[in-house]
Length: 106
Image 1: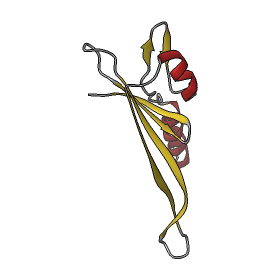
Image 2: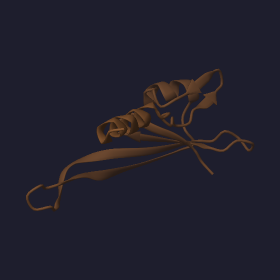
Image 3: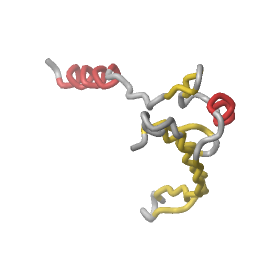
Image 4: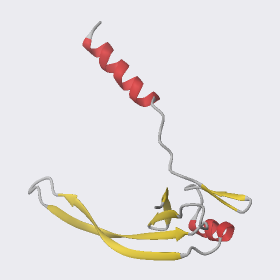
């Protein structure tokens, strides 16, 4: 088999691999997923138990000097939904007003 055929086969296998989805959780009759807008999440699940927010610099590497240069800022919010004593809390990460991930807490 040729090297280009094997490379193409490897690429095809990588593309066919399952994409890991983030967590989802139930809020009453609703399922909260990362496809919701934060306002929809609050409408369906209520206010989170806690909210944290911070601003982070957005850095890119300058191709000429190789140094990192600040090109802007981003807002990262972490919302925690408490689901009772028998279920782990759910951690919702929101970046610039969009849900980026939902993860099971500890």
